[in-house]
Image (tube, rainbow over the protein chains, first blue to last red):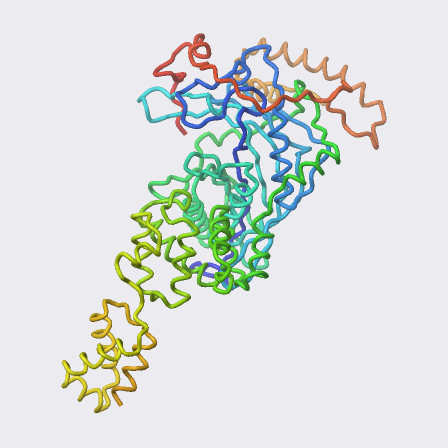
Length: 488
Length: 95
């Protein structure tokens, strides 16, 4: 695979690392009992701790610790028995404490790795440096008033997991696949809801470019990207910007950038004259977090089957390709759906590839077109299984099955009901098909002449006519065979 | 370690505290004497000693993951110098 991008003068390689911020799925915040619910009225879920009233003390939520450990296990990472909460000091209107409680030198989770799978069947490991727990900040709204910024502290103090990767990523696509994979693991573990629109999962991207084989170049960090599309756009733009500077003899200034989602461009943040100086130090309000081996063992026993394990199981049990299996297991609801479909009839196990295709191409395209989600689709796994059974037993043709699926999708009826009501059973009666063919031949003497004179392409025309007469129900293979034998 | 004028200005800026020249001079003197006093600790050999985050030997108390449903907005905004539609309103800080 060629990962290089062409500049004016030579080829360049991107070097990319991601810091992913994933909101922990929990009822209450990391250090207070306020609710974490999204979309409530402003400042309605703010305790005196979250508002940093003097004298308030943080008390850690034990479930958030469990969630972080689970995630660490899911990232094949080392869980640290001892970690420390530090204060990261900076001033911003949506940070009432004047510092964020985070983990600096001693994070709860250490080195790990995740694997991404490419379409061509190959895969690649992306190494994880660490995962640490920290508080989210409040939310600032800048566009509600010409002279004021509005601040909502509902999000202030919600637990975040920051997952930092090594700079192992080389293309915008790999970055997209990496964040999808992380999202998938988090959702299987149920440690984050993965909702990127609501900001439950967002990323900072570090990027530099170099000539292949050179040392790493100077990097820039693009802050706060909340969709895979924007991540790819921002990387592409930023890499091009850096290459243009370097090729015209300039040098890259290490900078924190913002990505403008409407122009697709990056620009440096304004207040850069003062390099960040966070003055981290251990939070005197919090003792170190210690987790025993027994506790870690107990948490490990709660871990469900993860996408990679499930993927390997699918490959082994159903002889699926690595790519098909990775598409199926990317989202938990998809793998659940596949499992339920294929287990709805013992026969279907022999048609696994067909089941995959009907889910990932036919059903997915209907869902996309109608902006629906697998979870609220009217097509139940059992019904899809029934439809596929009708195809595999030759009761209906694959072409008709597509229409049936559309009907199932909008009406919620079963495949059987629709086929019976509309009389869509495939015609497999030799005599009946032969009769239709005779009719077509009789009606088109000129065409027959031309065909017999060597115009082979006309076979399609006869097939089409016969299909029209049977309303598409003739078994295509039988139709072809009989037609060929009659037109000799 | 010695605190000079530059350092004191930097610390003041990071803390958002405005100091005049006289105050700067006073703080330089005070902070240096504090640091000198603390420097005495350097006389102790700490090779092979893990840094200590806390002097208490008790363990970190933890809470259950239970949220309370009280609507906090009125109480939280009570002391806000400026508020609008349930939000704190602050001078524009758009980046």
